[in-house]
Image 1 (cartoon, rainbow, N blue to C red):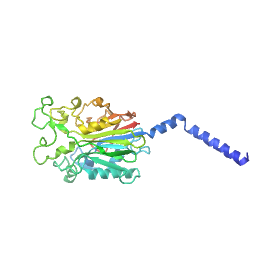
Image 2: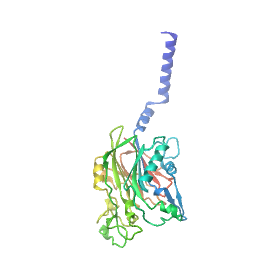
Image 3: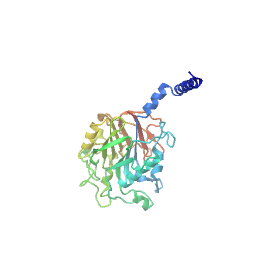
Image 4: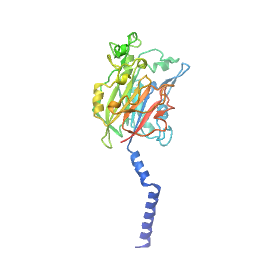
Length: 337
């Protein structure tokens, strides 16, 4: 062997040894596992307009909101360890326009082309309802008059078949002035049992839920996700439909289409602004799901929930992002698959 060939062989061995020393087998295994993690967030974004205690409101940009909710493995936002999410479960956007813009802003944040993230909405362009929405600036209040719910997904990691989006389903409620009767007074929150008068005629649409079944491109694993927003009346009187108090008396109900998609999925996710405290982590245990995060999500109350069936990683911040730029704190789960 020539001196040059011998030197090259020695250099290769030294390089290999250095790699093995720098990357122990256990660490290399953890790195490989980290690449198979589904990153999921859930938040009521409040139309990207927050209500302040003094009656004023503040408009938040999509990039500002995203920077506030996306976290690294230690639950910290704004670090180099923040990775592109796979799925955002969203409540209260104005419609397909705002949801699509938000999705494109998320694509841009990670250097992806527009359209990499896509949005599914319950209503494309819901009708306006309400008055000031507790904003002293009418222009900001107007931005909260159209409300629907959405799923935003990463097309790099998730595929979606045309038949795998559910029909919307309505929340339940106790119409004002109706006796509760242990749930007997509950109805579906939609016409003809919606709000009286023209001002809130279309308010019910903000509680229309939607679900979809995605497929992880790398493995073929199926992922069910649903976004739900229950009416404020659910806090005092749980209602999920006609004479129905919902699962475990919480007001939570899954539509028929959604249930079929859920039953055909391996990983299952439900993100919900329930407008109700005290919903137990085991509430959706019948679907194999567990609630994650026990910290308050709005002021001192926990009214937002994220239920998951899957191998959820522990969270140093209890799956709750305290600095969220919304009146609701975001929830998240990183799920190994």
